[in-house]
Length: 327
Image 1 (cartoon, rainbow, N blue to C red):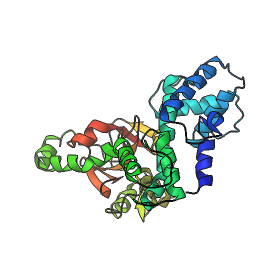
Image 2: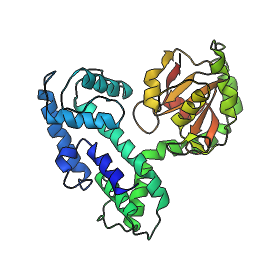
Image 3: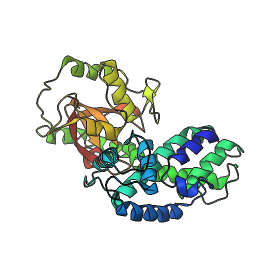
């Protein structure tokens, strides 16, 4: 990613108006001060009024895919609707007001987006490098409190440790899937028998296009996990699902949150339904397709496209949010 790209990331940040002269040199503590200031101003804004803080909120909601209208600082119907969509995605009370919980949810989602944006750079740099790419990584990691050194464009031990700390913080729960699966494997036969009655489901009453997704999904078993991947060379979890539906000429949203909001809840999963999980952040952040017999197929960070147990796996069962269906 070039510096131009990172400038665009910063321009869409909630702190843009406050840090335009020093992008990504804010430390994490400074952002909380800015959030507090913006929250106080937003709380005073009445419906239909215009305020610079609303403009910052609109920038951020646009970046996160919730707001698609003109960024004008006016708190109107579309801005309120965007706030409600974000609140729904993060399991917050749907008030349409930018309260403290909403500001925190916006900031968390932006952090996830910015970290995702520098992942290709992290994969391309190594110890000893001296480059603009290293500088961009340092600036972002400094901004989010992972990097403790100076922004000098040199990939040294402090930069390496910051990257490790970031990965531990963001991805630990996902990478624990492998260990949890190994522990459960020894009890698999007994657990399967015990859960047989619980995992009985109605046969799926769906269109032909839905049922044909299952064999197609299985044909990608072993495909590697790639953050942001949307094709057979590598998938992330939502990219995998979106690709399968696109092959059936069915258009669905791109992110897990959007798919969660787009689909219809069902009381228990049937073959072909989508199953959602809460992994590395609050709210739906991972999904797969239910195969029946207590199994679902998904693109996991550890082994790529794989089949896992829904009930009986301590990891997935404890993080299961529910099942939904694309109507």
